Image (cartoon, rainbow, N blue to C red; front, side, top):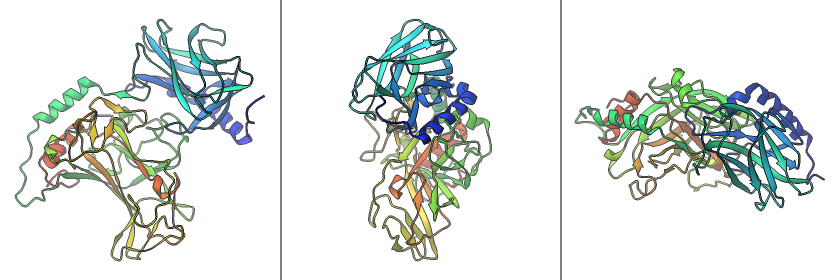
Length: 456
């Protein structure tokens, strides 16, 4: 007997996932040029038996495959197992009481066993753990992989969030994306060799430059948190690179030169949850992305590597934000805030003011990874004006200043991610190396305020 029934909406979602996966399976499961590990989302199966889908509480959100019992299976097409050599296969699992295994076979349900990943109780159906198995020899390149569930436990025994296939010998946890050290060293060398521009005597001595942006488009996509899965996210409002969608990579950003930001050399992607007023989307009428420094010594700052990405804020935070709370939306302009919404969570602005939010990102980096499993662990905020410890590399302090063409009312607002406290933002770097490096050298290193053109 199943531990809980599969609702109709879950079955419909599962059917839709099959259709999408059939069309997109190669995109979902092949090894991106920037990734050291192939991560295959469980819901991206091309065929299945006995599988339902549910919203997951695991890091990154999305859906997990659920109600999995002995004999249930999923088929994944085009899984890139890479070149010959050791391979580590991992499964992200949750189990309240059951034990068993995820048996991975290539070619067919009865094909050769690639790996068997054990499953033990994790403490709950949404309490997640990663189990792994090392493989000495394996087929190479794209393969059809079947995940077959095996257990002596009656009924359902496990949920599955994702599978990963990466280099063997105890490689990094999936989600850690290593920087290409050769490319990074070349970028650093280019930056070090740059000659700083002379700072005029009347310049404002603040380490800062910016990109001035307008709203580009909206999609329920997130290429950092749920890459390759269109529609898997809440609605986002994008600015910057006009090509940004679920399939965005560092390479695709550099290949698409259309941007809603000035300067044109900034092809980065930026996005935030969509704001709603009375059920209608309210898009920003302007966003300034500031690049500065909060270091005691800004001269230690270096540019971002190509393909660097990070997230600020917490989409899962759903707490009230009464007046005086930290990191609030506020009113900018004459008259400022004249009241609060009925629920107390939002400001009401004077007719001459408008709603604004400033979102601050971490500014210290580990120097090793373009991304991390939670999209935050590879970065940290300065401590006492310095970077150090596990995050010794000073990077520009990025902040979004987001302006909306509304002042609000007692009815308040909502975000696609929920309450005001869930405000968050994503940054995916695709600046031209020379343009970014010269701005960091001229404006941040020399503590001189620059405009969007990178001039004083």
